Length: 215
Image (cartoon, rainbow, N blue to C red):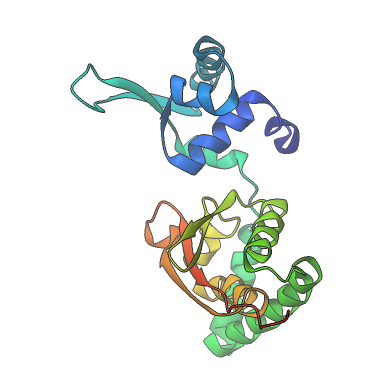
């Protein structure tokens, strides 16, 4: 199936929602998409048949357990992966022949170009609009991303990463998003969770610099 078309379908939207939240019941998904629970269950049956979701009973309170659905490892193939074995091999070869500083210089260059592209997209003055533009840019690059409000700032949630596989061996790749946040959002930020370290998401807590008076 073609990934772009798939994610525009109801099944694709269900897969994306499960990636964002980890698990959900048919009733949860029905409320999210404005569909009947039966209509959602029909889509879940197909996804389960294809080996993309599994169901398990979860006790949410004193009532009987609720059936929740979550993605299987096979569902990972549906999400864009921007790396391949050749890129991994090239980076390993550079590291072995020229040392880790050479790999760091490569990602320094990639970070600079990523910042240049991001500055063309992230042009708002309002801090929240900046974070919104960054989130939209990440989505266009194959990341399931969203942001939320937190005390004093914003949290950026990356539920998928096109580079998660290669980043485990080459963590320098993760510096790219940090540079982009620094140069486009400004202020202070800290990463509080990481996919490559076993987290459910890459989470960045950001406290943008306040707008200058008169801006």
